[in-house]
Length: 208
Image (cartoon, rainbow, N blue to C red; front, side, top):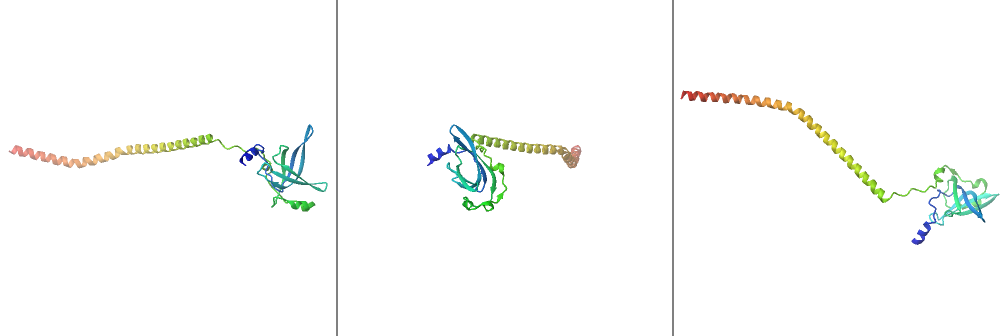
């Protein structure tokens, strides 16, 4: 089964419009007649979707031609299906609108709803996922940028510390002056006492 699925992948169209049951669509089909070819347009209501996830995905479109109901089934991944346009979108609750076959005129109308026509008809190929090397490179870049941010934060912290040290050094002389004056005031009585003791000792020696 895996080999069959891999083989089917080669025949799948890269992108298809966002088709839903109840849509009024216009199908452009390539018709070959001998050496000539032309585009035939079939417009109607999409009444059924079948096997949408497989290579045999198909849709059934119904329209009224000269008072007669006509249904046509298209293979979505067929190379003869050149384009599908979504014109209107209706509110439905079924995948197969078989009840429309028994209705005519106003009773066959569906409640139309607003939708993004450009987005629904967009069949651009989605961008591929980034390569593993690109992912690794982006992660490395993010890490480097985060490290740079941390370095910047550390450098700012160092600057703040340096500023605090400078401020402290500027405040130190005043404190030192005050401390020196206090030491001098404490040292003065001690010096006077020592001088008195020296004089007394000298007087005793003279008396002897």
